Image (cartoon, rainbow, N blue to C red; front, side):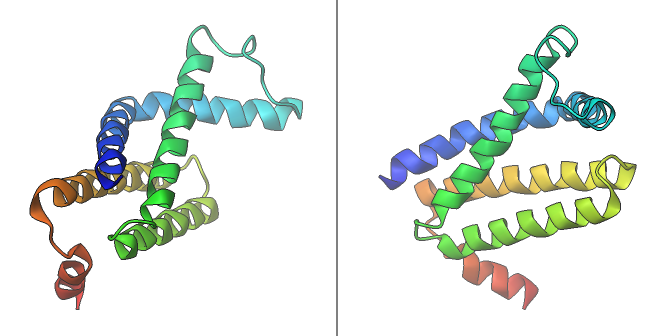
Length: 145
């Protein structure tokens, strides 16, 4: 069961790479989405988006959902401590971005770094599961402790 979970992690990692490559396109679409909501007081339909942007928006939201699900179910694995740290990291960064403001430059950079950290964590956890078999939490504590 663990092999299937971490294999799925490889797929999540690859979708994250694609997401990071198109990150700033996503931010433009997301900014437009929220601006549209504020002005019209309704959710935009697929007809309100530019051609192709609605599909991109759905795909990018799907990537965020995949990350959340993979990390959430990772709590059931042997590396549960690392996954709890990732959940805490995710929540902390989201709170910081909400405090700063979603579409300021520093928030965009912070969100980009968040996705880089999550992507690197996914590939490290996957490589560790299949090859290294290290106690990553102890290694992390030694680095920071």
